[in-house]
Image 1: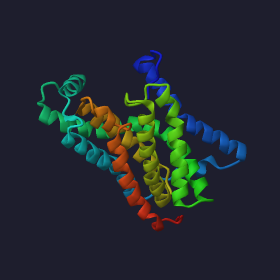
Image 2: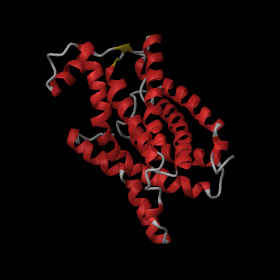
Image 3: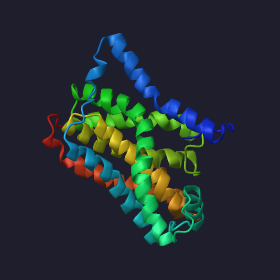
Image 4: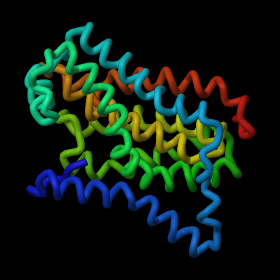
Length: 260
């Protein structure tokens, strides 16, 4: 996330980390005020298979989304300038693009993932650590997912409207696509959180989404006049594909202790 005002890369990163850790701070203060156990927010790792699937689900829907974008001509594969700069930054300029791209994908997917987790954790302590379990005590799966998703989306609105965290389209368009995608992600995250009883599935999903969409598929796509309306978190394709994934997990809600 970056803000207008010339903060630069370092300043933007510092502010981004600070913003993403605000839900964790709010959760801690809420637990202190209400005398709730902060240690009881689902810190256990749980069944590893849910963590593995939480990592791969965003990769799958991102790959499907960008495959559609490339096939339909709403963006192209691949951005040679981005690949050249990435190869230079890693000291791998001697590698042909056909070798570098899969290596970059793997390196980014492993090493970059830990950096992505460090920011996602700040939000997820609030959303899936605290909010989902509390809401699930008084509402069913559908309501819990919708309420959490709407809060999660609205929390980003100031950055989309007044900052530069958007796709460069009219703000109403970015808000609509982003909100649909985030609420859909909420259904997926809620399912994994309640199935695994671990907030780490939310961290894995959130971090994987940010990593692959923001750091691989979007920059590797050659943009044209239509791309900003279809690609990234603010375009229509990920929004539509994520709705399909949300419907799939919604149909599996009866597997959870909280139905509805």
